[in-house]
Length: 297
Image 1 (tube, rainbow, N blue to C red):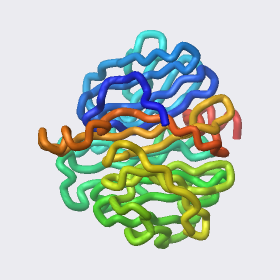
Image 2: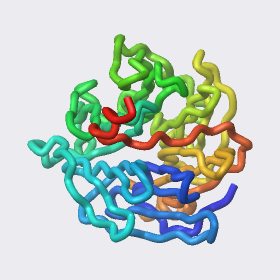
Image 3: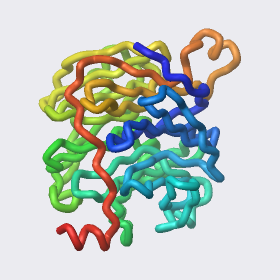
């Protein structure tokens, strides 16, 4: 396991891999920073942000999509400039964005939560570049948003409840067509902790980072445990597949909530790690703006 050359994050989250540029991106949500690691050179760059953000997704060679605490933005790669696409819970300044992912159809699922994890203050939304729809309400800490390779199944968790649900989806839109059912419960975590971020691979396995469990575990579509990788940071937060063959996994972590003594006892917390596990990853889907969906649909 390799530790990437990057600053320690108070709340490392939201990793994304852009295969076209062979670069990985992730956030320190609390530190209001977007990190970029270029595998070709081994360099990592920090991009300061004006507010907290938690999700980055590719649009094209010039633009990215960012979910920030007050809205969903376009970010220009050339200069880092931001332009608002749509407000997100603009009437709830005590909330911020959290976990999210782009569905294979090109639409976004994005979760929100209270900045102090207030009970059931958040929700999960669907966005196509023009319209925002509420999918699930009364979520405390939305996490584990990911999708089966064919786009017919969606997954999401509430870390506070320590449950991962799955729901049937329309693969052409990423919208639910059924009611959620329980997929994983706390007892399924091999090293304990709480379900945080997840990603699915090419075979449909769901790989979950266990907050407080210092690990990433893979679960088959029938919920059985396949494999666990321990990470030298207790608060592992989110994985994504990286590398041109998508056979490695990047995992973020955090030291949020630690006392000085706890930070000393967990010196690896907050760093970003690379696991060479011979994975069968699948690429992150690019976000398609509404007009571009119409042109390609």
